[in-house]
Length: 117
Image 1 (cartoon, rainbow, N blue to C red):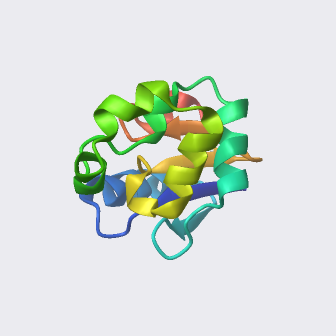
Image 2 (image 1 turned 90 degrees about the vertical axis):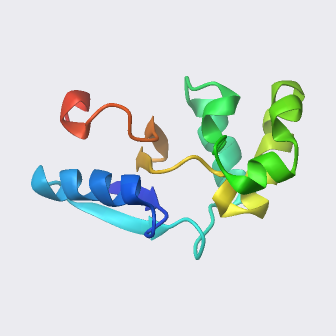
């Protein structure tokens, strides 16, 4: 089962979710603010993915700028990043597409059809 981790008010998340539905894929939608992924879950994603650490952060978000993370993220360990991300779901880049505990895509740059789902 696919997990679609989203911020429901985000227009990009709504567009991505509509594509998943259009493709006829079964997925579980998870609100990133109400059900923020745990530190251990995020750390697992980071360690098992080929994505750069920075890719997990919503770099255009207000919270990212407020915390001055542009200068800090390049020097964070995976554990430190997981601590930060688990503390505030709005710091996490979205949407996230997860299958069997593995991140398939962060954000919505490529369409899901291009992923071969």
